[in-house]
Length: 222
Length: 222
DNA sequence: TCTAATTAGTGTACTATATACACATACTAG
DNA sequence: CTAGTATGTGTATATAGTACACTAATTAGA
Image (cartoon, rainbow over all chains, first blue to last red; front, side, top):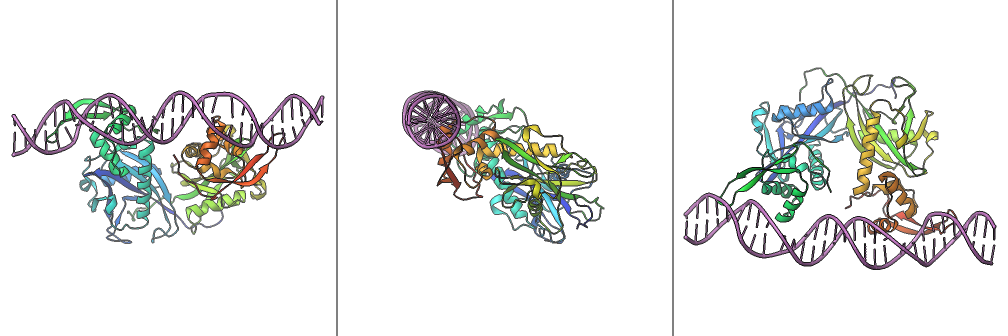
């Protein structure tokens, strides 16, 4: 490795695309920037990696600082390293994406007085830096992984109905699914079990509640 | 983003897992380290990212410096960011993997007088840094992508026979495939066409040669 | 030049998986 | 007690994947 040439220092950040299903729509958490550059624009939560923490730890720390949640699904997405992606200088970012269960989160309380809010993925404002590209990459990854892994379970609360789970698949996948075939294929995975409880939430038959057999486990299927 | 705290500087490198099929086996290109740390140990080709080049450009540059090849398949793999992965200090690496067509390469000539050589993936020496983990990650990615993309075509020379292609799938996937089913599924992709030429290389019927319709194109299939 | 050896090249029947589809059930609101 | 609404369930069909055996074209050597 070359050691004599002077190298312009490169700063390293993490940015996190935090997904959650809210009101039957896929949402992303954004932070309004308080300072330049891109003051007033919306951006992904994130920040510089400390010298004494791993990149993954930095991402988990930022996630907790912005949302107050721990132990949610967090996966490295891609590293964005264009020369001019940050006007302040040479900054590369290791992007992650996180899945937060529906309704499990009071974001504003945890978000350090900065203006944070959820935006529907199909109604995003203009984003700072290259964060639009990062969100698009994360969205594509999420859609792809829905098809060959059990990642969708990571967006469910502790107890959930099969109809709720189906709505998650439909909202992310963007197409309606057959109820009987959906239930057949989900139950065949043997990832969930009945809790024995029912949920009544309307003028109709109550739904059985299910839980994950091994929370946190994500399998590759198909 | 915090700006007042002093940050220990983080250096950024790229490391590249260069795969090629040689003598019906999957091989990886390694470089013998000439200096400390890990002097004499084998390591992945790679080096520091310059301040005025993108991370992807840095990877492509390292690839060309070590192998002399350009325009081969090169994909970002994963970013390895553990605190203590490099004894010299805080260094994170953006790992890539590359696919080089069989027989298209004279590595030693291009490799800048350092000792470079191919190792079978099932007979690797002990590697420097966390490069063993990087190779394992790349190998897993390659096997997975074989199953849902047309990435295998990127390891073929300009003209190739269907039997050659089948051997690539068999060598990477690690299991024998049925000849008729293999040909049926490959031709159904409509990715290749006959060149009209034949290759005779032994005491048997000559094989039809094929070429990619759109070289460089990689599709997601299935 | 004939025979043996070797790899190339080809189709069909069967099995497993995925898809399409309709009605009874249990509850609430009025 | 009736109307409305979301839950819960099985079967038949279509599609995709898998298993399987022989002929063709060449070279080497008897």
